[in-house]
Image (cartoon, rainbow, N blue to C red):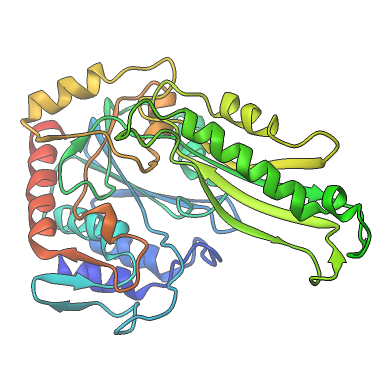
Length: 356
């Protein structure tokens, strides 16, 4: 399993820039590991959106793993694309999120599992993901009665999570010399700041208690202007929100659009809007039954988004279960505990044996 993880981590699948296609070495490696006993299908949708499906036998359970990772970033103690194992941990970009799970599943495939279905994709981390949507749209999900999305949950079965809404905004102002009194009202950054204050108020008002995170609203990036003595003609903001089951991305966006001050021009773009799990109109009854049947340890709802909600929206029961903790993902010196990998391997093996 660690050998497979070493090979997967060595493949640079950062997203962005998502410089990957159907000829990328990671797919050749996966195909080599599973061998000729699997029927493999590679779908290259272009621009780094690639799906690799491997099926043997007549499985009713589908495992979904994304192979793309967030950018490496700075400050690593070792090469992020070279697996380092020490003190009971495996370090490397993607080791936790979620190539560790892929390594466990590849090892199970190589061991001769009679009925197994793996869907590996490459566009979960960046904007504009389409692999899972296209997989479902092509009818390829129809043979399965349950999906396990292998995101890090400390190997507990998670049946509910928040959605994810990503929004970009552009504010317009009228450039000029800062000595003009109109700067107070016609500066694009001033308008953006007034909007931000009101937006934070809307987000805070969604909290039902001190412990409730509400919308998990975050203004992640602000840009604009030229210099301190020039009225800013442009302001840019990129924000996100993670709404809970039952909450509407569309309604929340409308409430924040209404925060734009009167007379200020702003336009919005939504790069991504992911539904919560279970998706609107669906419930978790079938997934709960699966958890009971398989004797899985259930975990509490989580705040991060996964592609399980896409399967749920299509009416396919889905849960999230994988090795590691989300706190270890997306960070410098990302790692996954070896005992978590071993536990995931045992759980996945049992699921394949019982419900493949």
